[in-house]
Image (cartoon, rainbow over all chains, first blue to last red; front, side):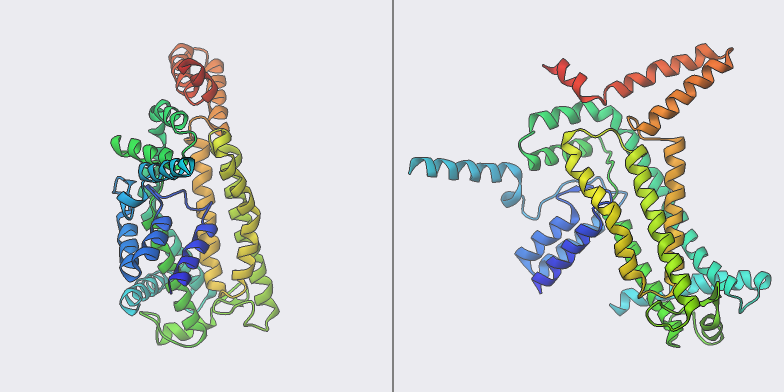
Length: 90
Length: 301
């Protein structure tokens, strides 16, 4: 089920690379949906739907992660750098 | 799904039947022209509703010129970290309460309408009523023809040569309009690309040629009526974009420079008003200058 949905969203991403100027959120609705469905399953579908509803012309957009404490650039960089240090120590 | 789609069937079929009623006295109730124009009318209605959203987006795109220096700064600061770069960009837009990007909802919201139209028109072919399109309307619509091809027939589902010819022409038209719209935007409408956007440009080039293929594959399964809808909406998109690029191009794009030249030329030939318009000309290239990355970079260093 998750794989089917993810594949569908991927197909949408490929098909719309040029028609739809990208989403006003970061990550885009489709990326958000893939992460949310992969991590939360059915709850993820609801989260993705709610995100798409929020992505309307009257919202301001902005940075909006599924889980900011797991996904944001600073956290990722922190983990990445730490891994490097561990490798270096060995 | 039913609770979402039933109201949509009602809306789509309601609009079609309503326009059909309006046009019947002119072209006749059973005329193919009436039914075809009903579908075209549906497109026009949807696109008119969407115009304010389009204007809003264009306006916020224009507001971007003011943010350009900040954006360059962000690009420079996080040039090795695309994710951080995007995050900061989005924060910048949010802080200034403007966002050049379209939102997903209006785009995705059109998909169910398209699907509903597809179902309603398929219903005509299989004698299944949907929403307001029932009874005598259903019988009348089933016989309606668009240039000799019944609007409910598909390329693959029909033996008629006329249907094949009409669908092929419509698919070619759809591909043509999408292709020119896309090319027009790429060649004239977009600010000159720097290297960071090159990958995007490449992707767009691939899509430019892939789209006609996608249309051809999917189009053969769609009823003539759906193809009419699709062709009209593509034509509208093209016209809308043509107007914007001519009259109100994105600052920094080739079309913008062309408009600048035209205005400058006009100002010169007008003679008397030279001073007034020249002042405008003097301020606008300044804004343009901010878009040129190399200059800005040198200043920063």
